[in-house]
Image 1: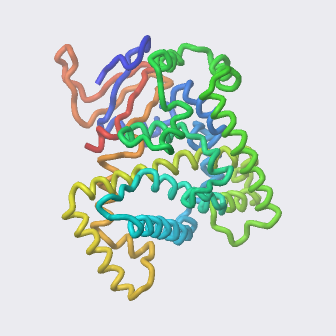
Image 2: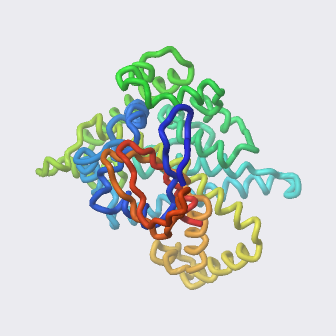
Image 3: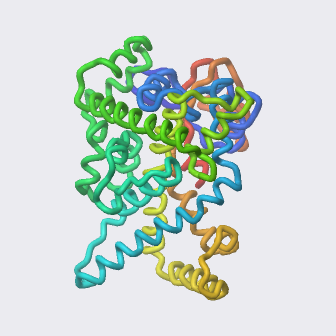
Length: 384
């Protein structure tokens, strides 16, 4: 679909065709489709150079530097941590329900899930207690930059504006028409000026990000130094695995301390609220279809009986077909990132799985796109 997406922008295309998406993300031409330049200025402001904010060889270097923390043995070793915090959340809910009339009790599930995923990430990324579930967040937990939280929370929590929600909208959660127009015109502003605005211009929202960035950077650097002093041997958290990889002889695996800070800040924002929202959507959909919820409970209970009191393992959960179907269907109908954006750096031709009819009436199965075309990628549309 061809469209005029923003005030003053060039023509853009809206893509959900599977062949086009494979070409953009997986072909040998993938490096030709980059995020818009204004994205890099914003990403650098929020995180610094990280795996999700770089392109080309620099991206490959960052990816190689954090890859040892995300191998199959490393991720499976974190499974007991997920179980611990899931159990803690259930105990919190049981305590609330036991102390009040069940008919009058209202649980803000989205808020509780947000606290749970934040504490979980603190443990798996830093081996650090965040204290969010207990209502006493540490300085690092309170300093989590909240831009991505705002975007996703506005989509999924717009009818439940709790205190926690309002705190998460301090940065960019409430946007005026003039602010939206300014964002549309970013592509025409020279990059040095954009960087000056983000880093120096007086703004309550931007100053909030600057403050939280400084706090998070200071604390993470302290944690890095503590791990180096005490040794990361035997630890399975992400930071320890990155530090162990960085001590190898391979220079490609070495990240500077500031780059490690940027990776962890990026992973925290990318993994915290996204996980909470996905869990929230799964529970919401299960509430709408009680019969599926009943079948799912039955599947899990039967699996527990087979374990004779032992905890379910990672392999046990993989063997539960309905549970895995619920997870995959949730990710399909409520993708973490419903849209993505790219811009091609050279003239190209997108292949199409489904031919399209142009205004002229011509039917084509390939779409020429000139250099600089804005490509709006609909992950939600592809999933449908």
